[in-house]
Length: 427
Image (cartoon, rainbow, N blue to C red):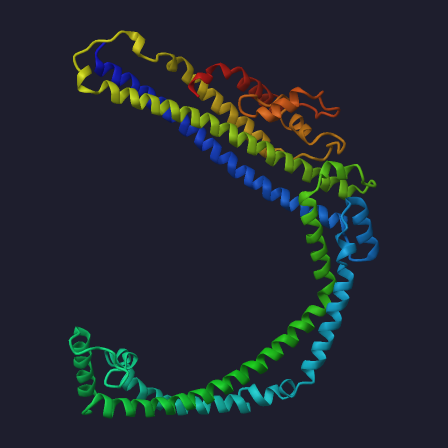
């Protein structure tokens, strides 16, 4: 066997394994997105659970929520007291604004024909010609630069031997020529300062009137927002209390909370869903890691084949012959099994992702137990070792779901994945 045939063999192997690695990568990306979706669904479930714990904003509901969750936040930071304080503050502020002369005279001040409106328009008209006169100077090339460096003033720092000195001199002459004036320091600057001073004075008056107008509008807006918020304080603080509790629930031991409940169906159902979604997100994350390990192992194999190709392409091997021992013929037999494994893993992932039937789940069961409902068989050890160890060390769940063809097919897939562990030499 010539070197070119060895190169052809390892080039083919590299292509096959790269295709397998890419397939694992695509599957991993899909499962990773599903894990993000499960995380979001878990957060949504916590929000619903918090609403079930605190359905109304009253002492009874808050006390019951604390009793059923162990949360003490409402005792330390009472939303009812905070709401009462804000209501008092809003009412006082509304009364103060309504007593403000600017609010009472708002239409006379800032209406379409209001005093301040007309004054601002008048000043805007007065400032316009001064702005045009100022632009006659400031829009000329390099004018503002010359002002900034203090050209033709005692503050001009350029020395005569520096190129900048002569550059600025030439620019100053250009400005004088454009304006029809003799000297930059004696004629241009004094006239520019006079125009700018008058412009800034009138523009300052206009801006002060503009600020007064804005102040009236801000008062009206603040009063309207306060009046609009008052009737909704109960809903606002209820939502805040639910969000406050949600933050606690996100860190809580939800299975433990299930032991403290008092047969409230809404709480039990939402708690079940939250536990299931949390476990689903955990299992999907483990599957993402398992898939990543498979991909990484294959990428190492791709690199190995690439080195083989490079090696046998060297000139020193051109005239040599080799026997079959230099080849890796085992790949052909294993590659189809790997493709089947990827397909069955995708089928398993789809079943995990699609499972959302929490209705009959027993709150007393371990959070891992939902796997049995979704799949019905032990998680594959090569992809999900943590879940597999738990499952192997636990007795079967007391409650299982009635089997259906889809469930049985995925259970078979899960078993088949485990039976393919003997192709692991590729990784």
